[in-house]
Image (cartoon, rainbow over all chains, first blue to last red; front, top):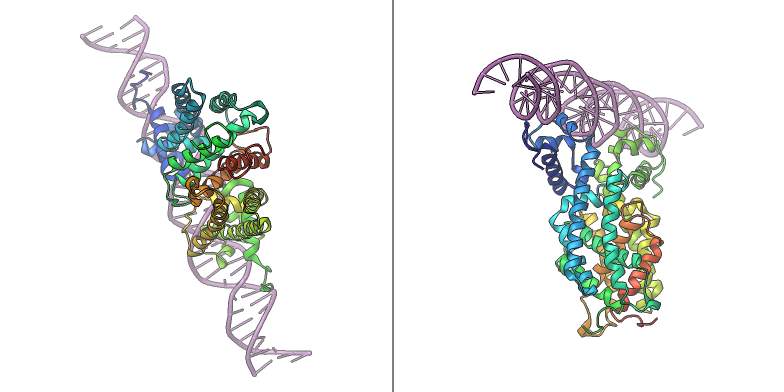
Length: 205
Length: 205
DNA sequence: TGTACATCAGTGAACGCGCGTTCACTGATGTAC
DNA sequence: TGTACATCAGTGAACGCGCGTTCACTGATGTAC
């Protein structure tokens, strides 16, 4: 914070913001370092004062994404407490809300094709995000009779998969196309049915 | 068919195969027309005897993918008959089998970023693939009491989303990572739980 | 069967382009006295 | 407060690269007589 001054103010963050805007607009593929620099009102070479190169800039986008993601999920989870079910459902909704509100971050995190071990920082950030999802699943799964309880990691993987699938196929232009349901409703209904299958919500609720 | 002869034999298909191999290896992004040509043992310019350009080649990959996909799904569906449930489950398994066996096709179809209306042919192929999924869902949903029955399109969207999510997050290197379950088991369990939630399989089965 | 011609799949050189990256520089900002 | 100096964020020109695409060509294949 309060680093501002110098020539630009805070070029580092301005570049991240430009990158995110470009990724949002054109996908993580269409993003170029040169255009991000241009959009930040700066020469491409200036980027190298703040990042090691193109990939490093994308990593920073993903990193900030995971930070926001983790905070949102954690907050949703805690807000839903003490009911494990409410906490879990809030977490699911927060997932989609994040994907919609921060599409650039989401793409940088999950669609940019960078290894989740690109840097130690990123590796840690990914682990945190995943840990939060799994914690919510873990707690909720305590309410399932032990003999019918799937491992919490599997449980959370299912929800994550469905959420991601809805985002990819139905929350953007491609390629599942114009299903006549808002993605939020689609996902909420899907998770509801899934949880009923686990015996976690009333069969006729 | 039997067009063979001339210089190369069947360059058109050789280019498609090369493109698919490259897409498999490097993702739909890493794919370049020049490299596909090279891999087919031919000058980049030769590609233009058979395709309008780079995108047209990718479209052909997606097109062939949809053809295989549709056939596989249809076959799985029919093999599972007359039980609607068995047919549906077979279709779900076929989905993942396709994604694993034809990763290049799968990526060209769902991850290459080309509009599903890039050409009329593609538009039609996408509609067919989707129609098959929805037909399986439609039939199965007849077995749900009408008052609790979700629309078949929603139903099929859920399964599609979960399948796609499993493929994207867990069936490849990124970024969900090394969950300790084979994706096949993960998906099969997920679909099983979901169907139980719909009351389509016994609660204690 | 043999020759003359037409076709057209593939060549190879060239193009303009934008990319990521480097480098010596310059000039505004912050600091020491 | 004012001057001299050090720092270092951003410049601008240049680079090599591989891309997609074009074009006049050439030479193997298929066809007509």
